[in-house]
Length: 367
Ligand code: MRU
Figure 1 (cartoon, rainbow, N blue to C red):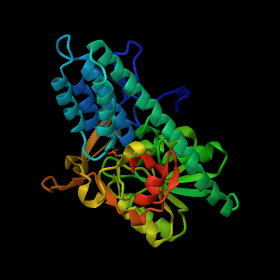
Figure 2: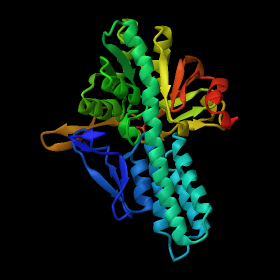
Figure 3: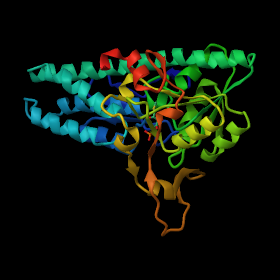
Figure 4: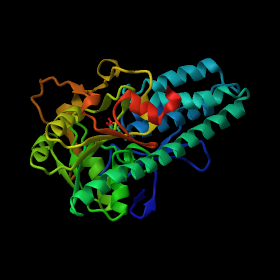
C-alpha cells in the first residue's frame, strides 16, 4: 500500500537478509517509525507488545521469527531441541490468533526437510517469504470476492453511498497488504464505487481510531470514527448496509473470535437485519476446533491498557490515567461470535456460509 506516495508493506526482510523490518504500530497515527528485528526476543517483544498486530501479520512475524532463530542458533549446528524451544516461545507470544502457530509450523516443516544448517537457514527464509506472498495474494482475492457484495448493495441503492461498519483494524496494517475486512472496501473504492466506512474506535487500544482511520484516510476512503457503543444506534436507523470484520481464529463450525466488542456488533446486526460478514484468509481457520466459545483461548491483557489512555499533546506522546487510581480493570482482548450470527465468510476461495459443511465445500482438502 502507499504511504505518502511510497509503496510499503507491514513487514519485509532487509537487503542483507539478516534483519526483519516492521512498522511500529504503537506509534501510529502520530509517528511513522520503522523498527529492526534482529533476534527471536525482538520478534517476541514486537508481537507481545503489539508493535505488530492483526492475525495475518502476527503469523508472518512468527514465520520470520523462526528464520531469525535459525540465523542466531548457537554453534555451527542448528540443534532441533533449540529450534523447538524457540518455536514454542514464539507461539506463546499471543494466544488467540491461530495464524501465529500456523506461520511458525509452516517454517518449522520447511526446516525439517533439510539436514545441513546452511540449507535450514535458507529453507526458513524461503518459507517465511512464501507465506508472506501467499497472504498478500489471499487478501487480494478476498478483496475481489468481497467487492461483489458491495457492488450488489450499490446496485440496490442505485449507486448511492454504501455504508460499511468495521471493528478494530483488519486493514493492511493487520496483514501485509490490502487487509481482510478492508480488502473488499479498497477493491470497491478502486473500482469507483461510492463507499463510506463507520470505524469503531475499538477500546482500549483504539485500533479503529488510530489505525483503520489512518489507513483509510491515506487511501482516500470516506470514513467516520464512532464510539464502540454507537453501532446499535446507527444500525437501528438504517445507516449501515453491511458489517465486515476480520477474525483471529475461526472454528471449523463457523464460530468467530475477533477483537472484543465484535460479538455485540453481530447481535446488533442480527436484530436489525444488517448482513454481518467475516473476511479471512484460510490461515485463520482452526481446523481442530468446533466449539469456538469454549475452545478458543481468549487473551487477557494488562489492565492498565484500560486504565490509561495514550495520545499526544503539545509535548508529544503522553499517557493519561482515566479511572480512580485504585479501581481494578479486566482486559479481555477478544470475544467469540457464534456462527449463527454470521451471514458469510469472505475467503480467498470465495464466499461461503458459516457452517462446517459450506466451509469444507471451499476447502475440501480439510475434510
Ligand atoms: O489485538 P489486535 O490488534 O491484534 O487484534 C486484531 C483484530 O482483532 C483483527 O480484527 C483481526 O486480527 C483480524 S486481522 C485482519
